[in-house]
Image (cartoon, helix red, strand yellow):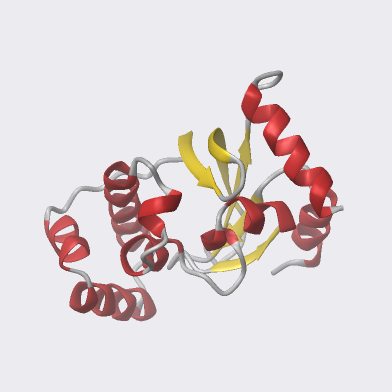
Length: 167
């Protein structure tokens, strides 16, 4: 991780934001990201969480859509940045999850760079958050995800309360 990217994450205390590598390992993130979704904290893998962690179906009310998006996005990355490590990761997921295997074998490719998700947050309820992604320049293939609520609504107020509780 570049020091400047880490410095930015430290300043964004009021937003769930995190950086992933090509295999969707979370490399760094804001404390609010980890509070909103356990998968959004360093040491977790977004795709692995979706298919292998039983909490995923509670965290993602729209789990089926999230699962499809996760696989088609990973397939887009694999096509754009072939890497032996990514191939090994996919092979492990194919062994451990029949659902992942079926979705991977469907060969859907979609690189989603923006959108929205519903996230069930413990003690808060379901938040509707939009997101934007930013490819970080450099050979590492890292991507910055920033989630945010629509201004002035219930999700905005809930996210502000969560952020204030972390400070």
